[in-house]
Amino acid sequence: MNSHPKSIAVLGGGISGLTCALRLAREGHRVTLIEGSEQLGGLGTFFEHEGRTFEKFYHCMLPSDGPLLRVLEDLGIREEVYWKPTTFAYAHQGRFFPLNTALDLLKFVPLRFIDRIRVGITGLYGRLVSDRGLDSVTTVKWLTRLSGARAFAKFWQPMLEAKFGDRYHDVPALWFWTRFNREKGESKGECKGYIKGGYKRITDAFARVLNSLGGEIRLNTAVQAVDLDAEGRTSVTTAAGTESFDQLVITLPTPQVEKLIGPAMRQEMPQLDTTTDYQGVINCLLFLKRPLTPHYWVATPESEHPFDGVVETSTLTDPADRGPRHVVYLTKYMHRSDERFTASDECIRAYWIPALQKLFPQLQDTDIEAAQVFRAPFVEPIYKLGQMQLRPPEELVHGKVYLANTAQVYPVVTSWNGSVTQAERTLAAMGVGPSVRTHGEATTISARTTELKLARPLASAQPLRPAVAKT
Image 1: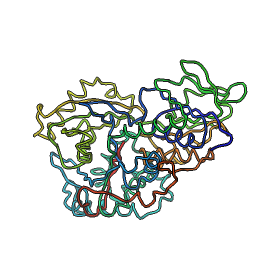
Image 2: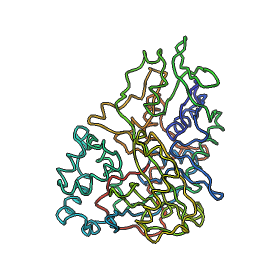
Image 3: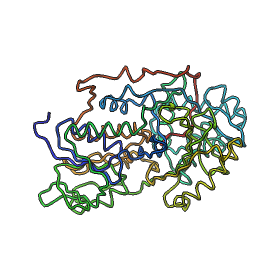
Image 4: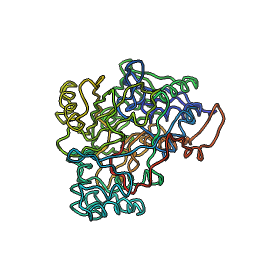
């Protein structure tokens, strides 16, 4: 227990804020977690359907997600994670091409045979090459050099456009290299994890443990300003007034942070990069009475599709978590200024569902139990050359104000695991190291991270994983 506890406000109840709040409370500090919405979890928020809860934006875990799994161990729920093999396919002119093994790639007829070979070599090379210098080389140049202009235009470019729209040209190769290497340890095939009860189980566990440690959670509390008061302490202004704290941890997106900072704080902190924008996302979630595909993810990069991918999470989740239905997410990344981003839910459903039925002609209106539409404006930072130099520092005001957000996650994959990784960097800047406890006792999970209980045998080795990272 800390002999000199501080009062610390954590702004934002996403996974970064929850991780920081948990670790700081473990250290004995008086933690107040402030969240503007009615739920904890950020992109992991949920809604109810037929007596069960479902994520508004799809989520999964990988065996390599050590930092996230350590947090679950800390919460005492690590053993509730289950694992299943999953597969990926690519839709092209009404046909579906699995892309999970070297043989699949050799059969990938949308590419000429020589281009298939070069794409496969690109995947292998991406796992072997050092990341040195890749922050100053564009993904376009790097992949074109490795795979060739034809393969880039046909295969890689549509998936880059799906992620970044017309801003993909300046994305550094380091971003892509990280995606190659996130799953490189899975030589026996791709495997993903989910937790019993869904991601609400995780946020509920955070709330329970934080409350038991004396932490305070304030929901529906929008922050209006942050600054330093006359005594040099940090201050947070909400509709309820202004309150001072010894320290402040901000986990909000940088564009929002910029709007909150007051003059006294701004004088004490380095200038933040304001040129890195964020890509948003629209998800149309369908509850179906029948499955669409055996694949977890089907990429739909052709322009005729209004969505970028079809993610059938029911290939991963147990019926106990979703009931008798099959759950499909249609996803589209786009900037919040795009007129499609503000289209009504009804317009999205009226356009996207017929497009899905065209792709899957067997899907009838009577097969659709329900459809929901969700949006998030700040999901994926739109990276530029030299992004490593643009990453905001963890410490904004010495000893007082700290930052942990997705603009700092680069080049790590933007995911819950990436956000936990960044939270740990920020906590280290505060002098707080990682802790893993089960039922109050310290333990290690380095071996447990790779103990997978699989529902069926894994697929064979996969030499290639396109850039279709999860939300």
